[in-house]
Length: 199
Length: 199
Image (cartoon, rainbow over all chains, first blue to last red):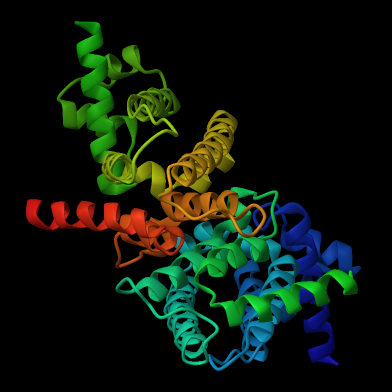
């Protein structure tokens, strides 16, 4: 039962943070929206920071569930991008405040740092794998694929700050498209056609 | 004389903001470092926000001096990247707090928005020009060059947030390299050799 109410508190907090911004939502607001007393709320989460930590745990759990491996096809890579986009929508307050949260909470700074290194490493490995399979051209400039991975991270993490008017996924495909081989372009076009018909 | 002291105040403020962060520096700190009275400081700039506005004006002035035109060679494009990097070092506090400042000051949000649209438009035009001159391949995917321009903006504006361990300029060249024609690669290599020998 206690787990149920904790989960409900976290879900409501995510909803309110996304709607009104992390800073503008008070513990009282969360209690009110849940129709519980402030005392009941602080029994489960002493401070707003504790709620934040709970949300970060959920967020990381969902991240891990994506179960990203470097040995993937272009289609699988695209489905990862879709999952990342959905994840960003679900935790939009976190991505909107990604820098403030980093500056304010050392644990979040550490998580972001670990995640950044892991992200760049795994995308770089994906490029190697795609190259070995003939979907992506051999690297002709030193560290090209590592740099592209950094650029993909920048768009994935900060694209919403730029307020793109353009799908993050489309921008990332535009970065990858020029390094695709003819074989890779063929797989990419099959993928795109499937997306068009499923819309 | 009044212009001289105003300029000195702004320069000292930039130095302190870069060193200690915008939020941590008080009007009193700035006066102390300049060996002037707080009253003298507030005579020239009533509030820290007025100093910030003065700095933003300098920053924009320097930006405009770069005099960026879309009709440029790859070498000229590279020298723009060098200028952007130097600019970011000179105003590092601004780029470190680019999102906080946006959220706090509506005028800065507006400036950033205008700048973003202008940046994407001009880089997209540069790609068109480079394509017309045979340095860059014809666009094979719709909006490819516009998307690359967005990705370049993301790296230029947020690269320091990611804490790259890698030159912004190198990452941007890795994004452009795959769309260069043989002719373009030749010009790029001449450029790189010149950089190597000048180091």
